[in-house]
Amino acid sequence: MVCERPVAPSPLTALANALSKTGAIFVRDARCALSYPAYFHSQWIAIFVEVTIAYYLSLIVAPSASFGANGQTGSYFTYLVVSFAFVTFQNNAMLSFAESIREGQTTGTLEAVLATPTSLSLIILATGLWSFTLTLGRVVVYFLLALLFGLNLHHMNWLTAAVFLVLTIAAVSPIGVLAAAATMVFKKTGPLAFSVNSATSLFGGVYLPLTRLPLPLQAIGWMLPITHALNGFRAAVYGATLWDLRMEVVWLLGLTAVLMPVSLYLFARTVHRGRHDGSLAGY
Amino acid sequence: MRNVEKGFVVRHGARHTLSKDRRKNVLHDVNLEVRRGELIGLLGANGVGKTTLLKMMATLTLPDAGSIEIEGIDIKKNPLLARTRIGYCGSEDRSFYFRLTARENLRFFGSLAGLRGQRLQRRIGEALDEVALGEAIDRRFGEFSSGMRQRMTVARALLSDPDIIFFDEPTRAVDPIHADELRRMIRKDLVEDRGKTVVLATNVLEEAWSICDRVAVVSNGTIACVAPPCELGASHANGSATPPTPIELFKAITTYGM
Image (cartoon, rainbow over all chains, first blue to last red; front, top):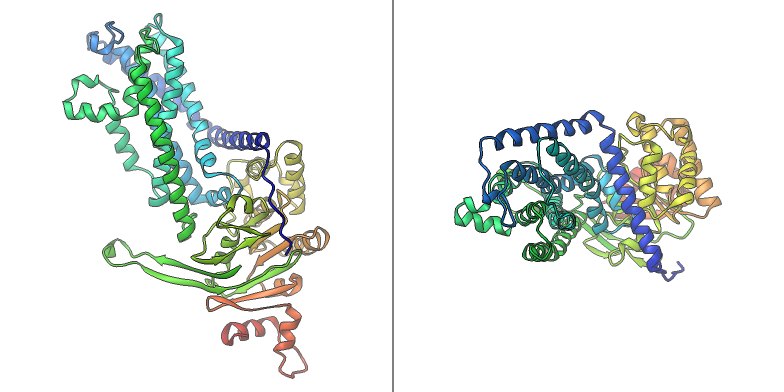
């Protein structure tokens, strides 16, 4: 058999290919999600319910400095709205990556996707793209509805908010990749993701400020990306600049820099294990 | 494919978590060279390792030992590059997105195969026409019958117009007329007219005998024999005036070896 020397594509072609594949995964996920219209539209109703709950809860909790940021007193309503809106990034990361893998295992699409000349990193990272875009849309709707209930965004530093949005997505993505790696091995999603989500909601300062928790729990909370993401975004609502929040920025960047390669490596190892023991399509 | 070995761990249930997992060897000392432009059939009893062999060639399963090369590319060292040369038609006919149409499904898999723009659109149409699903292009995959789903897996394998195609029982669940058309398409269009190299795993002996240049019979964890169907018949004739039928040959090879 005559052997031909493989020709590597130019960087531009490789980039165009990567963008095309990322777009294809995004469109697939969007089309699949939109093909369930009742399920898709019910989430907007859920947001309305959550904002309403936040509003009525805030009526029985007095404004406090611990709910605010940047030296300002804050209302519990603003505190909860930012929490509820932002924690969905983490919840989605925990669920969407893992569920995509699980669905691929049960239908056989995972094996078909892995048979294509597409890198594992691209396959798994692009899987989160639609979910994060949808979450972004949800955050916008959260804030629009909250404005009707009296949310004050007059002091908002939009640049800081935008940077923390990107940092949040970057920091929670590795958690999603780790959840996907766990699904590759254990072939199930479920209680673990739910427990982790609930625990991080408590320790990450979603319902109440971290300072109200016992010291050991504060230490756990301080290590979580969601804590710093929420701190940053809350402070942005009260006008904080990126310089004011440099420690949060550094922490989120550092966490992403460490967790991203580790999570991608672990995911690649679990796929390698699946190839070795023939369990890629097993469930 | 040289000196390939493959075994799988047989996992115990939860009641035996402390006992040691057992390893079951499926394939050993497998050697096979497929010539360019050849159609080779893989035959063997159920569970003998035909699908495992195909999956190893398609980079989906890793061999424990030995090496596999696709046009000089070591699939262990460079699986991504190897996948640009191959099309894999698996036996799992559900491996599509049920809520998407045939066009949307193939657009997705075509993009992952590296196709873009006009070429992708053209290839989707051509691939569906080749498996007689052109009219169902905008129907949801979930509405397809088993046979249509099976033909979709063939269309997906043809999408990037690869040089080498692996088919795992492509005519399973397909009605006799479409099965015949698929066989003719594989033999005439792919191999004879376009010079593709095809490895076809099948349980239908007549299929292998009618379209394959050579057949490889997998038995007792290895390839018991590789030869053109007519030569296999002649070598087992034993002086008889009438050559043995495919089923007689298959029984003889899988029971007694070559």
